[in-house]
Image (cartoon, rainbow, N blue to C red; front, side, top):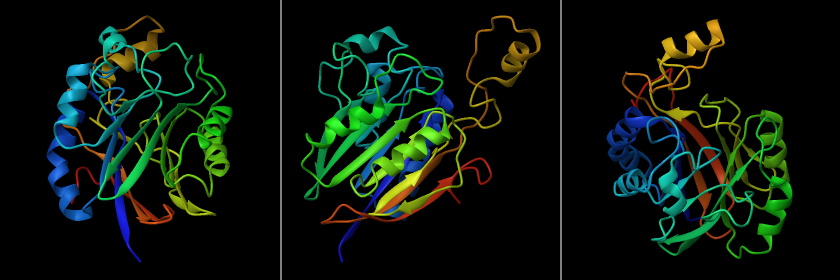
Amino acid sequence: MSTYNIVFLGDIVGRPGREAVKAALPTLRERYKPRFIIANAENSAAGIGITPAIADEILSWGIDALTLGNHAFDKREMLQGWENSRPVVRPHNLPKRTPGTGLIEIERDGTRLAIINLCGRVFLNGYDDPFRAIDELKTAISTPHVFLDFHAEATSEKIAMGYHCSGWATAVIGTHTHVPTADSRILDGGTAYQSDTGMCGPYDGVLGMDRSRVLQRFLTSLPVRFEVHDGPGVISGVRINVESVSGRALSIERFGGPERGNLE
């Protein structure tokens, strides 16, 4: 049986996250020999949002596609950041007039992979129903190889989406909370699932941000400008092994994370 690997990296936070990812990529390629590498980059510009220049920088390292989330347009440059067909997806369940796309398809070594980005609605405002959105996309995708980054707050909503896509998607992987969850599994029908991948960034901060500023906000309830924590970044991600013909996931493995630092 022929298989291939997908490597997915959790939310890249600021320069420390970008530096950690760039440094880890040679080891990831040697260890997993991935056919596709995908990363969530919605916090890659100073900890909130992304710019076209930073997207190009990350893609230049050989990452195949970038997913985003609720901070997709926090940098104004991204309003015009879709003009050169970068392999970047923003939440598909934004209004149809929103720039960009929530679905792309990329191809390598004979495998065509559809990549989808959706945002949840529990504790996040401004998004259409993600379940209806994925049902609409099911009729538009012809390849059985489908990767969904579900950028959501509530684990209940994420788990429900996993089961909703079970047997159809290759993988439903959560992002947004920056904390890796220990619930990676293969759902019935061969769909890899994990509620949150964690982040690539400085874990000595608070979700990657300077802890003194976050504490000031909690202790005083006054407005505080958050900045990325000044410390080394670590990576968090998953490796998914996929059957080459059917697109069904066979296994999922977590790597990195705060308890292990960078790859060992």
